[in-house]
Image (tube, rainbow, N blue to C red; front, top):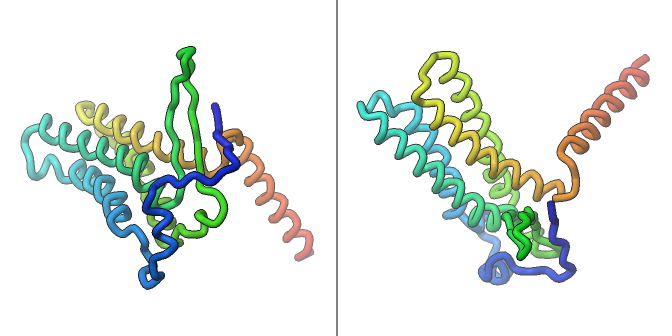
Length: 200
């Protein structure tokens, strides 16, 4: 895995430079990106839940859900991640044919331009929807609706890939997620132990 750490601050979008010049009347600088960040995700979940009620054809439902999931994957990876939180990731193949994953985040003063509400919308949408698709995967297996298994696996994979990519961007491409989780739980355990000692 490769993390690009350039010293110069590169604008992810040309509009970012103009964003600092705009007045701060609105708390949300990119309402359209926020809308589409949630629109495709929520639409895919709603179509999955209500598909059998409104449509009798499985193929039409499956194609609609997969198209919505694909549009969501592209929108989150290429647009809303850059605009809402200043993160982006991609796979790059070098001349030797080796695949490298690149994780980037905004640096310096541009990083402060991200709105708290936009960031919250981004991360809540990014975390909640893959959890829903995992729940749907277990429910299809336990209810023996095996024809829906490929659809929910697509949901888990596409939304899980975006979640994984952006978490790697946030914590750093070289940091192991396992080590980060171990350190977090170790600190929580230590805090609990220290608070119990103070109470005694």
